[in-house]
Length: 190
Image (tube, rainbow, N blue to C red; front, side, top):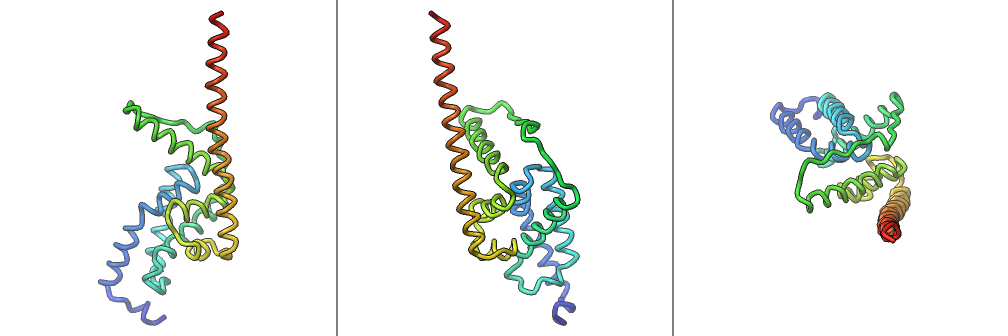
């Protein structure tokens, strides 16, 4: 503990740079958890602020990434306790600039997947974003969210199944709509 109090300035500067380098990953996590870019940016800012103020609490430099994700998780939980945000998914507007067809199609797929992830329960959403989108190990997720390893695996399994059902359901609904539109058009010609 005493060696943490007397860290050389060079080490503190290196730690600050390492913390700042994790910002993109923290932003992706926060955005996938809350679904709001501005809120995600605020959560990351708060996370970085707390990390820099409490850098003396980091015991193992090799655990920096998990430590930062844990701080982000705590900031998110604090926000939910204080603000209790409610977002109506119908109020979300999709913005697309004029782009080539391929890029537009890819963006629509990404949006559908994001929407399906946002619709997952929070506990499942956190686990699936940490494991599948960010590549964290089950052990890291267990440490970050402070839940048993078995709980990580069961939440991940349920999240993947629910996500699969929702994404396949979207595909089936669109196919049925396309068939009915085509049939209606043929009927109106008669």
